Structure formats: C-alpha cells, structure tokens
Length: 127
Image (cartoon, rainbow, N blue to C red):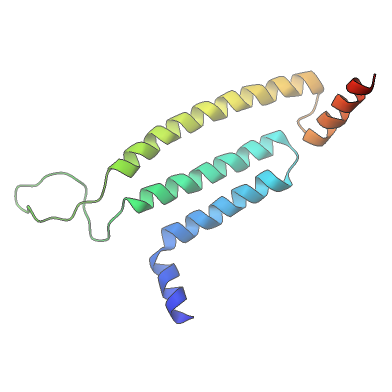
C-alpha cells in the first residue's frame, strides 16, 4: 500500500488531472442545464490539458533553450505545451459558439433545462 501511495505522490499531476476530469464528467452526466453541461465539458478539457503538459515535463529538466555552456543539459519536451496552446484556442472558440447556441436555445424555449425542452418538444410533436 505504501508503494502505491508513493507512486501517486510522484505522479501527482496525473492524479490531479484524473480527479478534475471525473468532476467534469460527473457534472456533464448529472446536470440537466445545458450551461452547466458546457462548464463540465470545459472542466474536462482543462484536465486533459494538464495531463498533456505534465507528460512533456521531465524532472530536473530546463526550458529548451540552447546554452553553449552545458551541452549535456536535460530539456523538457515543448511539443505537448505547444499542442495544448492550440487546443486551448480551439476550446475557447468552441465554447463561445456553444454559448451562442445556448443563448439561442434560451430565447426559443425560455429555459436551458434539457428535461423541460424535451417535454416542450413532445407537446409540439403531439399536436
């Protein structure tokens, strides 16, 4: 048991990302409000960003800037950080588009609760 705890402590960014991802997933699965579901999706995206950036980190590594003094230096991998920067930009764009759709949904139905919208849709289909 002690070995497991030691491994969890050493890999704390991955454990934190897992906990944050589960919080976001539970928010998406348990809430019926579309806005809260969007927040849950954004929380899940943040956990994925943390995991990928943590995967590029090397303990004892430095920024990947060449220094003539030490050619044997250990550098971290900059690729996951660059990719996640692109992912963040895409995530913000998709979130803005989703918020616009949620606003349109609210103007059409007067609510953002999916259960109530489904009931209104069934009433319209029955007529």
